[in-house]
Amino acid sequence: MGVSRGSGYGAGPGSRHVRMLIPLKAGEPIYGQIYRFVRAQILAGRLPAGARLPSTRAWALQLGVSRTTVLQAFEQLAAEGYVQGVTGSATVVAADLPDSLGRTKAADGSGAAQAVPALSKYAARLLAETEHRPPDPPIAKQPGHVDFHYGNRIAIDFPHRAWHTLVSRRAARAVPSGAPGGGHMALREALAAHLHRTRAVRCNPAQVVIVNGSQQALDLVTRLLVDTGAPVVIENPQYHGARQTFRAAGARLIPCPVDGDGLDVTALPRSPARVALVYVTPSHQFPTGTVLPLARRLALIEWARARQAFILEDDYDGELRYDSRPIEAVQSLDTTGRVIYMGTVSKALTPELRIGYVVLPQSLVSPFLAAKWVADLFAPTAPQMVLAEFFRAGHYDRHLRRLREINARRRGALMTAAREQLADRVAIGGVSAGLHAMLWLPTVPIVELPLLVECASQLGVTLYPVTPYYLGQPTRSGVLAGYSSLSEHEIREGIALFGQALRSRW
Image 1 (tube, one colour):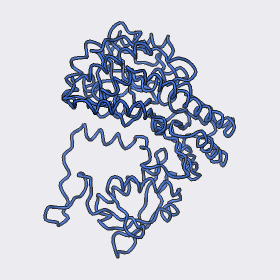
Image 2 (spheres, helix red, strand yellow):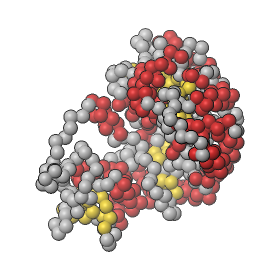
Image 3 (cartoon, helix red, strand yellow):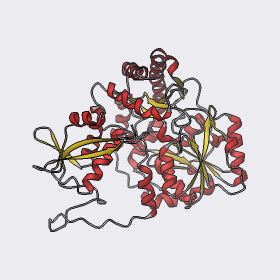
Image 4 (cartoon, helix red, strand yellow):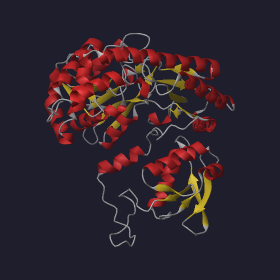
């Protein structure tokens, strides 16, 4: 896979065809490499406005990849405004480019290139890191294609009737003028009570701050605690959104291995040097799905106390457990104010709601609120008021019970299909909670994992390699299989197709 593949296409209307090579790299999604290559050619002026791209079918044949892979790249380019369709189903380079970092038309229409701005070190780090993130979900679901993307949801899972009733009631009242920077107090009170009852989190409502999704919580905590060059301990593998945030801030990342019991606390740094932060997903490690046992949680807290470090506990899907009640949070064990607890309602409701929360030690409440004010003043109030009523009326608890039952059936379909179709070629992990499973592949060499994923894509199924979640080389091959956006039939069909790909060579 690590060879250049040639594809000829025209440089403009009426121009002769030229031969261009795409250097495909192992370990990175192919559709992303195609997208970035074409985007770079457009911004560099080698593909001018109106230049006609080859058909997806022809290019897939020339590159030796599936048409679905090329379609994904073209859809991303079209969504961002780099290309557009014209009569006759052709795809051409758009006349008006969206990217201010690339070439743009001059005011006089001459097409002269603008000067490239002098980006900050933060921007440079951010752009460098996003080149290596896992792919975003496809823009639209392709008919007949099974996509095991993590975190997607089916619309029928959402509690439409109860939610819309509360929205209608709220709309009939006076429009709120705003909310405290920490969020609507009724929601903060409801969350404090809910988290204490279900996760044993110890806090008062003033310690709960509403944020625009857990990613904003990551960003604000990083701004408060992490200076350029500061050491930050992260799990390895880890959630890529956290890694990107820390790297963009200039942190010095210290990867700590994950085993069958989660973060290996014996591998934490033992030098007396202070560590700014340790980021963990203890209730359902992402992406492996392991659970940090009590002894390790206590050892982690003691380690943080001894080194004056803060623990950022990301409880992104801890409520969605299937074999037992939700595990008590690390925060519930902390007596020294060293644990920052963050979560979201997006996994249980919908990502579009963009409401997350962070429970802060008392010492961090004021600085966090100041950072939140600078970032966006306050989160939108109306959705918070509806969500507060959703909690108070008991709808959230009822919805969670229903969602656990639905996803338990999907999880069961995946596990059964994997045992039947993949047999000894797979080891299933991370299925005690959450919205995805890890399919570890002992017969697949790590260097051949991209080829396996591509073979599966050609058969009509998308799975996501574990490679991008590691700092450095993974210790074993595996793919993430999200099941929350698929029916049980689609799950069985997708695993059967993946089994065909796996048996074809491995």
